[in-house]
Amino acid sequence: MARRKKTPEENARREKIRELLQLANVGSMDDIQELFKDTIAEFMENGLEAELDDQLV
Image (cartoon, rainbow, N blue to C red; front, side, top):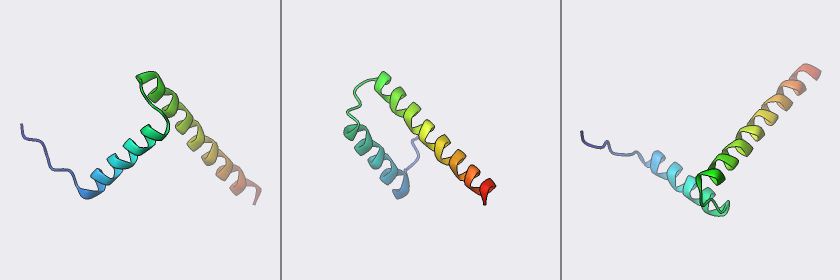
């Protein structure tokens, strides 16, 4: 099976991910898991805060 060609958007996204991993000093799967957990926690916190703000308005 031939590989499909990546779009410019996919290539740009992958490059940003590489930059993030370098900035975060990611060198192992444990580092990646910790970064993932931190990222998900941030998304959830922001979403919950927005939901709370909507309820209070």
